[in-house]
Image 1 (spheres, rainbow over the protein chains, first blue to last red):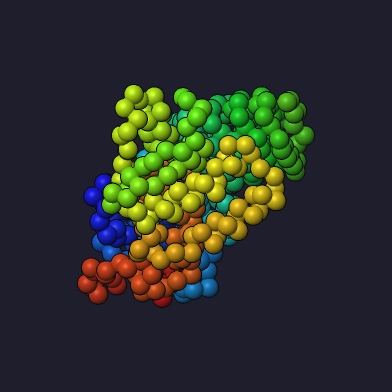
Image 2 (cartoon, chains in turn yellow, blue; image 1 turned 90 degrees about the vertical axis):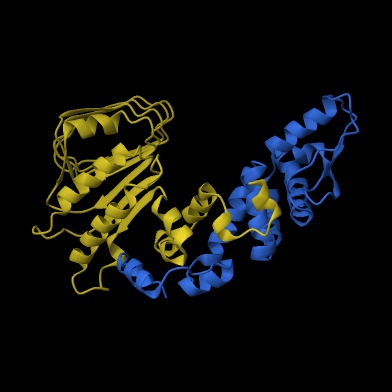
Length: 230
Length: 162
């Protein structure tokens, strides 16, 4: 390190953590360019702890954007997963179109959630829209809702396999659960939670929030009229 | 700590002497430790060395002195606005000559504010640029063969590299 400071510093000699911090400030679609700049930067790119899959960059650009997007996700996981630095800072999926049934997106998204949990993700954002709900196993839900790392969780169009969810995550600040099925009660007992938004979860009968730092609570439900307890 | 001490002298890696005020040195944990060492030590003649070259250290101290009043006492919104403008002017510097060294120094001296500012500056330089423009800005040598390049680009069909 001392040598690096004294000598003529090159971009590639910067510590990996520092280069990752720079990548964080660059929009993801620009940050991808790190992967082709040079061999050293390529390897730093592979360990960059952010996974971001945004379909909007694909639509209109390709003949079969859904297929291209799917293979992009699989290819990225194949190259990044063995190298990624834990904890994963962020997993974001943006796919705001109902996918066609013959593409197995729901199982890919299920797998992505699993990978995020295993890599101690801090932010998990699923910005999707589909009739083909993503299943979450009870094991995944248990790990997710007790994660020591999670600060932001945004789930849309998931099917919970457990009726009663107790969210314990000690560092959670922001929670969005929208258009999910299977959950009948949601209890949020994360002490630092500041923002909670629950909407269009038709099976829901009760919500309880026990955080003392809550600043914003938004609740919209289409069908039933659940009991709120704060 | 003796209250009479208002500034300490430090050496750069080139051996030049610099003065830094006590309040400015508080922006960096390692500098602050050094300062406590100097103030508590019986042998006050010893001048600590900071492993940062003179050109970079001048800038680092300039940043510390500018930010110290705000960091130590808090500031109004108009001050924050003024400081933001100052930061932008401050970061207008040659990439290879200074920016890389500032990045390393901020990392080594644990200066969160300067670290974030310098990383943001580097990131802003590459926003919207093509791969060859980025290589030019940051003096990065392409060590891939054209076949390897093609293969890597194919892995990111959603990204326009040029």
